[in-house]
Amino acid sequence: MALLTPDGEQLAEGQTTGYVLAVGRDNRVGDGLLPDGSNATLDALAEYLTTSPGRLDAWQVRERLLGQTVDEAGSDDLLVSTQFRYAEKSTTVSSVTPESLVGAEGIYAVTAGETMVVRGRTNRLPDESTIMVEATDGPTPSRISTAWTQDWNLDGNWAVSMNTDGVEPGRYTLTVDVDGDTADQVQVRILPSFGNVTPG
Image (cartoon, rainbow, N blue to C red; front, side):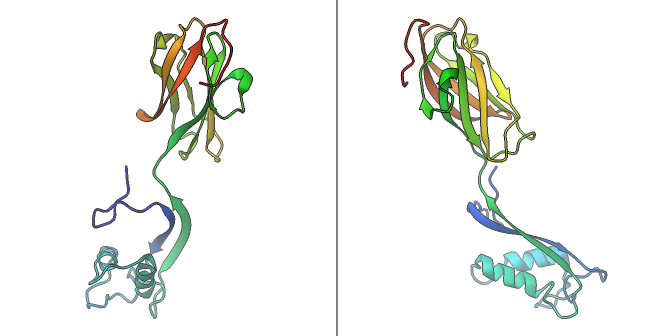
């Protein structure tokens, strides 16, 4: 689900700064008043930051926030900031190979009976999501074992192995689901057991 601005526009992907504000012991934001004379509650501050005569850039919003909180004379508010990169959730397949070609990039044909290795990248956090790969189309998709993983490093590289014993030769569609949502699809050729492994 995309993050939206107060105007309903999708938040742009890229470097982002987040702020956490805690009011001080006086239980007031800043000196207790906003420029228009209204009481400076957290809700009123949020409205002040998002409504202005003109469109504000990130720096201007930051200056308005600081000016009414920690930079305000007599303020004992606390403000913590952190930078992170905002990106839409993404999970993709980077390679499909027989086990004998693990490490190769691209989509390769797999001989029936060989273990098929599917590798990819994700920006999801490990242990919080499940990546499942299954064959959803082809001559005998139900004979290709469904595989899943919740185990990948923070670099986002994931991999699963799939059994192709008894699979009829032909072109198959592999579908990657993450927590029930389709994330990517690729096609791979399954060769007869006497065929050679060639790029698909």
